[in-house]
Amino acid sequence: MSAQNVGSRDGHQAFRLHMVTWNVGTAEPPADVRSLLQLDSQPATDLFVIGLQEVNATPVQYISDLIYEDSWSHLLMDTLAPMGYIKVTSVRMQGLLLILFAKQVHLPFIRDIQSTYTRTGLFGYWGNKGGVSVRFSFYGHMLCFLNCHLAAHMNYALQRMDEFEYILDRQDFDMYNTPQVLDHKLVFWFGDLNFRIADHGMHFLRSSVNNSRFNLLWDRDQLTMMKKKEPILQEFEEGPLCFKPTYKFDRFSETYDTSGKKRKPAWTDRILWRIKPKAIETVDENSSTSSSADDDEYPIKVMQDMYTCDVSYGVSDHKPVIATFDLEMRKKVKTPLVKLTVEGHWSADEDATFTYTILENFESSTWDWIGLYKIGFRSASHYSTFAWVKDDEVAANGEVVTVQMNKNELPLLAGDYVLGYYSTNMQTLIAFSPTFLILESRLAVMEGLLPENINGHEK
Image: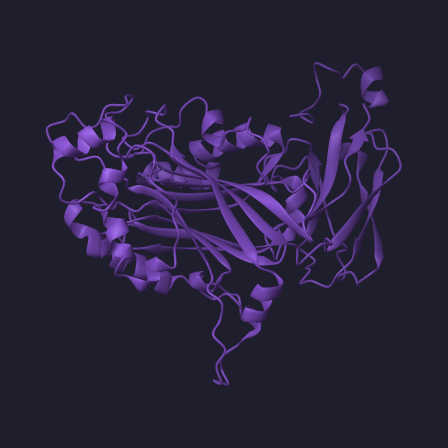
């Protein structure tokens, strides 16, 4: 159920979350990821969270990606931007990559974004294993997404557990109410968790898979076995594994490993979630019962709609895993922090004017800026031009501030645009104007600058 086209029930709305985890085995992305993102599905997705492992991270490639962004991020942005999805943030640690996309309408209500990472592989020096996470407030609800790549091989199940607990212990956020991962109301833990199917021989394993009798293998899945004795895992939920084990395939095929190693198939790639348990009221003066009251008044309900893998992708020896969810919640935050208003008609023939008003106090900065974005833009940095906010002092609450944009900075061709207010402290766009039309420049037409020579204004 998409939040835009479904009526609320007692003030509750359902938001569609589409998640992907994929160990891409250092491969370059395929030509098309539309089916991976299920862009034609209805209702439309509100949030995309994509976690990749083993993105090409050779030193030369990694340094290049820091400057230009990696090829996977480029493909995802190129695919999602025309559909109205904006890259909100991403975090990268060597081969681990986590990216968050959202519909533009949600961005003003995605706040307090922070990301962090924890290395575990090779004594933590290189970062080939570990976890990356992004946390944020979504309409006032605290969410955290943790993408992990844990130790490989059949005999290291206990080490995988130790690494998970180490990552949880080491990840800190500069947030008073959610300093660690498990403090968040809703946590998604996913990635190449590398748990294997124990005890069964290769023949039985492959026969069960070929006959789609996956249930015969569940009780020997190491993660399922661990859940029976590890209290922390018992707080996490996972849908049934009614799809083929996603590791290990010959590349560009649906055939399991035919190399000399003949590795056993396994559900290494997983997506789990945890709703924070209600706080137990105690007399401890340091404890807080506010989260319990908050959970009663603003509960969050998670309904998994799909949990599967897409075997059609063959660039890696892993198949990507897809999970879709409906997150049902009541909005705790309903109004944006800033109002942006476009004045008059805009074209490159004259300077343009707009106003902004601070509607609610927040940690604004004289480094905040307002960008002009063509509809279909990819991220906050994908602006046509921008103007700094009031540069002598931070605007007061309720004050209407007028800003001008120089006509020489405006696009010459007609198009649909929005203004977006970027908060430097929050590291995100926190407000948008209504969509408006920029008119074609009459002067540019008269001088023959259109359509051939447009001086780089239209990209």
